[in-house]
Image (cartoon, rainbow, N blue to C red; front, top):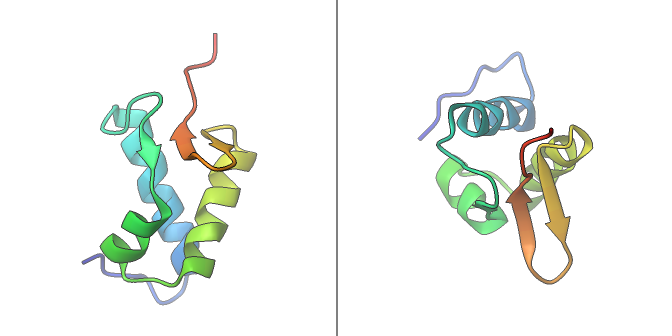
Length: 77
């Protein structure tokens, strides 16, 4: 389980870790970013996970398709 810095919101810390996983290729393009898995892995509420996905989506790192889920965005040209 992740150790959280009490001076920063959990969602920011989780988003930073997901960003790092995308940057290193641990999460390649089209990799499913599962909200349920994040809830379990990081032991946080669905609302926290939704903030993470919203932030990553706003940065263009993930794309969300209704009914399918969120996926790592393809690399930009």
